[in-house]
Image (cartoon, rainbow, N blue to C red):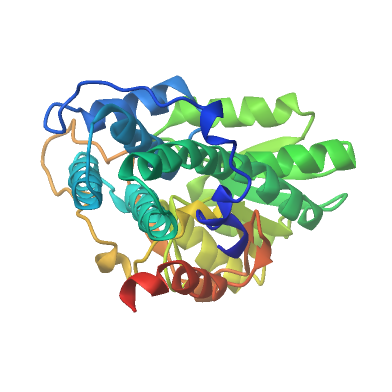
Length: 338
């Protein structure tokens, strides 16, 4: 993430007097990082999970007093672990908390003077970094919309805000002269309805299909020119962890020789190297053998799509091959392992 390096975000920081630091008498043990994270997500629909995790840690540093570097790092690590343990899928939060910790370490190495001045610098520039990460979605849209093209047909599923941003930008540039095939998720019908409504509200013609029709539409009708999906996280080897069903869509796209693009912000890059579906790092009850007629599949399940099925990652830093992820993570985290 060369151009989105947290350390780089400090270059154009406001003067120290422009953003006063609020002090609160809250002990580390009493601070509720989980509630803070959930409140942030609920209050701002544009927040991604990694950025919400980063902003939660910024609130933590602003609320909990600390006097030493060790105490600060220990507090951030403890609450990061607590936050990740509170969710079924900790991978997106790991991306955010690891990135913020590296930013914190880098800032502490660069700053001279009193620890209080260092702490104020962290809080001030931490907010700037979080804002910059949120703005990355605009960069993804600018990098990706030209793939769409007039008269083309895009297949997508899920509710990725990055994908929606790409399609919205393409709609403005092409006067909505393209089509979208939307793969409906029957485990989340309300969400699917909202996505389709939003796309049609941009004057984009949308055809809804069930998951069972993907192969038919791709293979027999030849109606799809490309696939665009989002991701909860991008792994070190360039694969993605995303909504369940993404892996089979990628396999079908590969078989039909249809480009498979992932629209994703670089703050979702995570130091994780899964080998297959059994190695995503947390347990999912996708196979819940039961005789109970009311038993239901989980609505938040994800799967892993390996890099060989991905044509390109569309990021705020431009269009990249999957190998770009390893290079960027090495650039950011290499100093911690050296």
